Image (cartoon, rainbow, N blue to C red; front, side, top):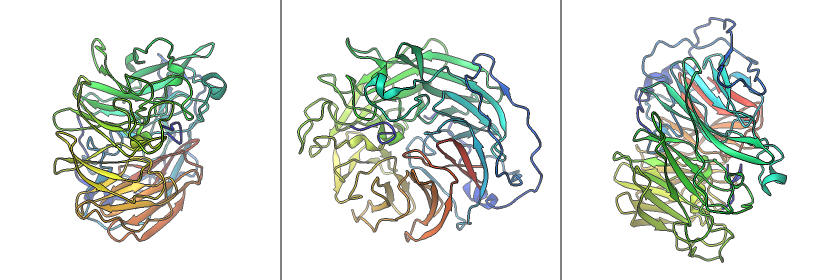
Length: 491
């Protein structure tokens, strides 16, 4: 397993169904200049270093009156993690609308609800912005991030190390949840879950969420890279190791109640050894209609012999977990040895009762959701490490896999055919109608492709470098992308 930037539910999912209307809003400007917006800070957590989002490169905002198309509640749009929004309109060229400098890197997707965009940074800041202008509505701090990470943890390439995962929103309660790594001094850290009221920034939940570690293990060797998930009244939090796999660690999923007593539950990978990171290239656990979770895991630590199979329990596997995180089924990639994570991206649930998962062996597996029995194996995906969450097009039955060596790999799941690489991007893609959007990291470009033909439609500069696995979110007629200094919006 290699994590870090290279490593770097959904109750109430709604407001995403009328995407034809959303795309109709792309490029339509109601030319009312942005008025100054007074920022305020959550009194419970004054920020250590207040961000100064600004509204640089601001153009007149889009005025939208379309109801319902105003939310992006968590990683990749839905609990199946398809990264796809249905629409029927053709692609419209994008332009950069605004840039907000937040004083820290945004590794996760921005999320949107209740008329605000929420972004979380590696400085442990949570920031709410006007989604049309980028102006600050409120900000809060979880505490002090860990710095000098490599010297303290023994490895790692995110520094400072604060909030790395994508937040998740409960639309029913108007709450956004984030998890950050917080320094407590002397090289010690813990992982803190905070829930904020979206309209006000008020803290409504605050819990330490480190798993109950075996003797000799420390939270400093855990990286909370996987995006958060929400289901069954719980927030689910995945853990892996830092880039370089230093120290002793296991992969974990921890679940806590989003209201009332936390009642923590957990799943431990590699209980008979170490490793089995759950980082998924920044992706989130997929969740089915029964509230069961699906995660991908990495290799044993230290690396096992090449050629596979990995000898430890639940390593190099897709694991199905109950709402209380009891293992219900598991599939192990028998060919994955060494550092060949099956968990480089999250499983994607398909509408026919199957799922798709792919790792560094470049083999895509199609599995039964009920039993995780293999129904197909598709070879030759990417030719370099597939990294980050794929996007699935239900209209064509094709899935689009981001490739670390460059390009987006289309795969026809009905025939097993692997199409030509779509060059120019390597980040996890987002599909809007028949247009696929993906970033090139760290270079800092955003490209649009015709998802049916693979043709490159447009490439636009982000204006900043972007973190590994950066993937755009879509709401209110905009695309939003985290960068190494904040958020950029495209109209």
